[in-house]
Length: 241
Image (cartoon, one colour):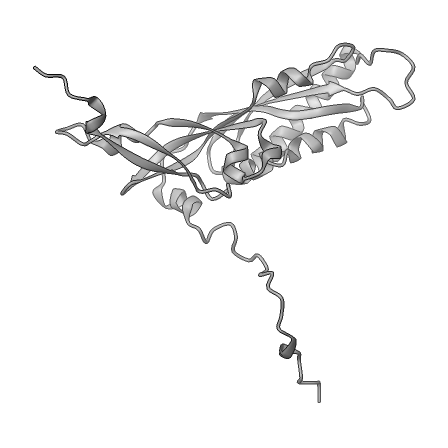
């Protein structure tokens, strides 16, 4: 039996990112053609893809975050994905770690309002005062415990009161990290506060209508003002009587 080239039996599918990200066509994936009981779309579902946030948002400043997307639905030649996980790149984490500083980490499991259970990990470092003479800036263990408690409170509040898509919107600009930094200032000043990892622990039952809302182009940018300059001759000529 002659072994044929396995790639002749494969098809390319486009990957569509959720509406939270600005670049929707984010790549392609291969799958063996439907043959007998092996259906191509079933083979694709559940695949996890790792992408850089810089590519998803066309912004090189976000290159230190990696996003994992999971294929949930196949329509024609398009694979529709949903958020699966997020983490910082290895080089970014290594560049944050310094001598003479205390590293504080915390993690928490939160349930979003639409039923997803996410585990979030946060990392932070103590910060030297501007007028400090001593070389180190170590926090005491009681302060660390207080900071960790505060971190867990903030993460639970920020993630437990929104849907998953809103949480992803918060993760991109690192607004939770900034909030932690602001609120822990009274215990010990922190810097480089990042949500270093987010994992999906549990997903609710798959709901196609909710999922399609995530992918509809109208959703998300509805209600944004159109920034179009007005023509000169379009001045308001009607004055109040």
